[in-house]
Image (cartoon, rainbow, N blue to C red; front, top):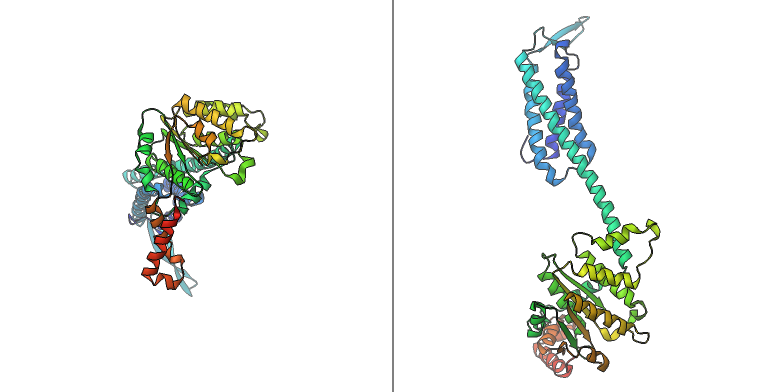
Length: 404
């Protein structure tokens, strides 16, 4: 048995246990007790293979058990040679064969006591291992069931998951671009302030507001990845989904994200979830319920960052934008959340953020240059081979960008 544990090693132990068990098969009565115990030991070893694959964290413990079993069985096999001899039988003088015969010797009491004690000890270790392994398997099954219910709960709170859209945006960010915003005094003050502040980005279409919002969200998640006491929640407005972004749906999505950040399901959420009479027909939450749950969940975090992108794409004809902003400002004020909003510079929206820290977003020449450098390979080969032509293309585009 090597300490570099492998399934082959333990199969060898199993075969040895089977061999010893067979040796005891026709033993005299005086060996009956230890014979029975060898059968139990062999059975418990084989049980290991009936419970499926052995987990990595279980292997080290099993190595020690397997090594102990092998050592015991090898010594037991050696001891058996003192009590078994081979005799030749003459079968009508035509052939001969070896026959195992138990010697008429009495097993030494101390020796049998020692072997029985060691066999019992190994059986106990194997039973404990198998029991723990079965419990681990059951726990994993329960965890999978809990994970399924947890996913059902999150979808009950809100089926809208902005994380996929966020990932798509981050994957489209050109390496090296947008870093200036993370080093700006406005962003630094917003992140580090002891009290919740509001930061408002405005810019013309195409200035890069959404990409900057994605970069900021990604940076917040990276900085606070290991601090579960800090939460970041966000919404990306999209005019293509204008009919599906009601105040109820928007705040439900924020609630989902706030709940996901908690290591323990908030009591108020759990009470509503488990309090529904019919598990498979739970009623959707009302707007009032969502707002109350956001309030009670937000205070569980020491800091909450809220990012709302493209507010100008929120519909306003039915009071959607007005209702959303009213509750958003109330939430920011009551919980001390840090709120970041981006939009086009529309007069009515800018008036809403009259007291907020404002920053105009324009395409920066360094970002444009980094984007062009990273996409020259897309141009025809004759351009890629001509450094002077590439330079002229970059200069022409940079000079005509004008903030977009």
